[in-house]
Structure formats: structure tokens, C-alpha cells
Length: 126
Image 1 (cartoon, rainbow, N blue to C red):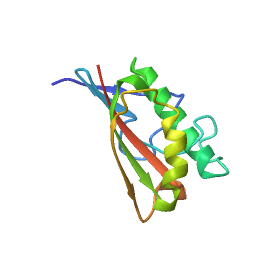
Image 2: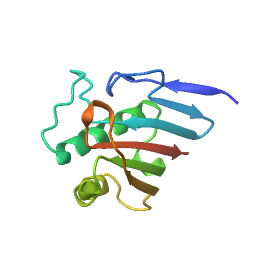
Image 3: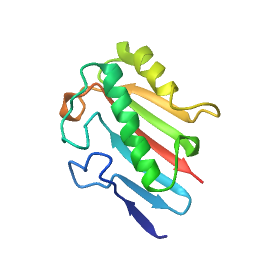
């Protein structure tokens, strides 16, 4: 099994000992993304809508670096700071998928990196 590390400057650099994504065969495992602006390295989103868009843009950049897009996503995991944000995040998230939606779970957690409200990880396949 050969692992290929995926890295792009169009998404935030890892803030710990992990890779943005790992490709194994036709599978791509994208690490959880938060609303960090890759240019500044800061969280600049003013609300959960802007946070979710930044997260999805970061995911899109990592997918693109590996030659994938949202149509290839087969599984997502969404972490929320509070389940009261579910409907808002779900509305934004849904705009990035046109059909054949991926499998998903959404959970509320006690805290997320940088005190953000949403983190999303994805698995894609070709």
C-alpha cells in the first residue's frame, strides 16, 4: 500500500502532526478543515455561514490538489460546537453537492480548534 501525501497552499497548513489529505489508491482521506483563511492563517469568518463556506472552500482546494471534486466525495463528518447550528450549516453544505449526496454523520462536540463552530472532514473515491 502506497500512501501519497496531498498538500496545497490553497488550504490552511496543518496545525499539528497530520497531513491535509492522504491518497491511497483511488481513495482520498481529507483531514478535518476549519474556517482558517489559508492566506492569513487566521479565522476571519464573522458567522457560522461564512465559517461553513470557508471550510468548504478549504476542502475544495485539497480535493482539487489531488484531482478530485465534490462529486467524488462518498463520506463526510461534520463536527459542530452546538447542534442548534445544524440547519444553518446544512443549508450551506448542501450548496456544494448537486446530487448523489455522500453518506454523513453530524455530531456536536465540546470544543473545536481555534474555537470555531464547524469542522468537516471528507473521504472521496475515484
